[in-house]
Image (cartoon, rainbow, N blue to C red; front, side):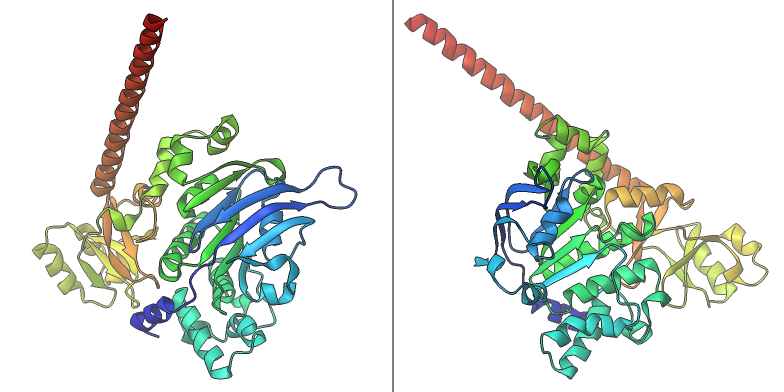
Length: 417
């Protein structure tokens, strides 16, 4: 399926629904205190809300009560004003996407069969299910021809998680619940999966409730973050920027941890800082044409792409001299790439571990788009710091004016007395 076709399909998909939790409580028999105690929360349509808090605080229990995998003891759950606490829970779950850690794929089913599961259950036609499977694989960046007939054991951890998200979205639900879905993969794969989720959400506008214990992940993904204490009591519910700059109390400050200013690098995306062109060659190009391109261009380095147009190696003149006629043997492997939805923090990490001083930016299937270099990133950081300084000066000025006004008021009151 083409990019245009996918975009059209995504545009026609069901948008997100409003979720309201009203005095939601869960008590387990024999426990002296509730696991979740009187939680009220409203989530806007199309919003990504992150539930974050220490282990055992009740965040996963709260999430699972929304689709009634765990039945609430008391309270109400409304989705687009419909009270779902009294309707058939199995039917409810078919209308809500659910993605968990380690994907939860059925090992005896192929990728296509896993994705088709819920659409078949709700009565979609065979042709519609078949088209939807291809559409969803394309949407999560997996080639349908390559992955359609594979089994979960034949996939990497990151590929399994992509299929898990595709399955959760297959029946086009307005709500997607995600319970630490990226917790079992390596850090680089996790970064890329987070970027994919951000890209998908920009296209689909679902209502996403996402559980994590990782505050950096919460900052990166969330429109708003609910920081939870014990029994899911809400310590602060606000935007990532507001929580970083103005934590509600010591508990929230402790959860944010050190380096709040650096964590703000997770609020800016690569697509916002300027992606530059960079000269490339193919792994199949003859060595003479590569030499010519190096001589003619302004750079002393080229990026070699593989046969699928993915970044492969950084090539310098000296590398080619040692290549003995085969460019594929020369150069330094590309250690990491970022997508347009990666954060400034991700991009800086990638640049710092790569000897080229820049990082390649890739598309949905890993194809090369451009580069972001250290100078661009540092300029963006400087702009952010300058904006912070100006905001701090304005805040101090406002406080000074407030103090001055209070002093004048007190003096006038004293004179009247």
